[in-house]
Image 1: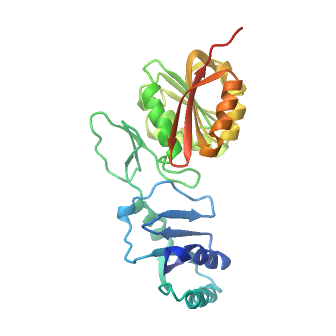
Image 2: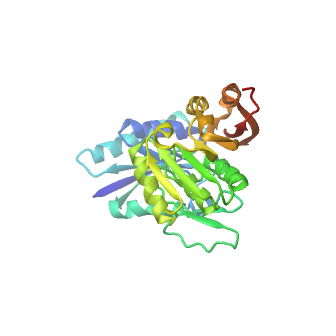
Image 3: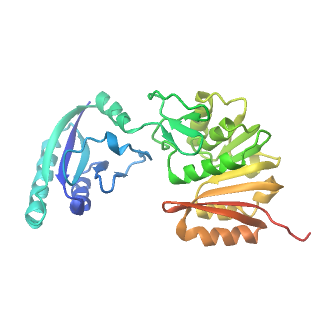
Length: 316
């Protein structure tokens, strides 16, 4: 199938308006290449976390907005409408450089692989390196490689929340650790724990896609002897206590989890919670304290936080 890439050279100030023009003609998503603020803005569920900005061939002082349209009877009309609207935008913003529109024919099989150039091995902790399968990488003696490909359901595992969880796992995982990964998603944190030497890991997710993707990634990384992936709710699928519980979800779910999580913790167990936006940190801390958990550290990276807690002293 043929697709047409619509490439618009513009300024950083006009990016949002250009995106609206593209969305108005029915594109499913846009790619914004701006050295000042690299953004991938996809309205469909097809986004990844990490781009190597050095690999982008940006030949324009400003921003480049790209979108893709399939070949069809109305294709030429859509392209002409885009050009007309961009021309009008340039007239209205004479103080800026005029925006320019170019088109390029792209075959689906080429497009399906072209994005791979942007994804490179990335170290997200002191030891853990995330590597796409198509990239060669020779690890240093102390590095552990997790192979994880971008896909429709999950990212490359390099989001700030995953990075913070990984760093906490590097700190707390021991050779005899039993670990639960709640809302395991792609299974990355379960795999990381296994690579760090945990004795037993159980990843749990209520989403069927996450369950299947996690099992596949566990197999790809050859840690099936350590990691079990279970479909369902933590409260229903496990019945023992863990040394470490990690949940990289969202603040509201973590607040709910805190009500029952101590049932699965030993007195010295650690609960690593991430996926918490900075505005929600105080709320989560309050809920953890209310339910018998003592916060021992709060890490922040970008707009996100990770909170580590353990069971506090409570009067029986």
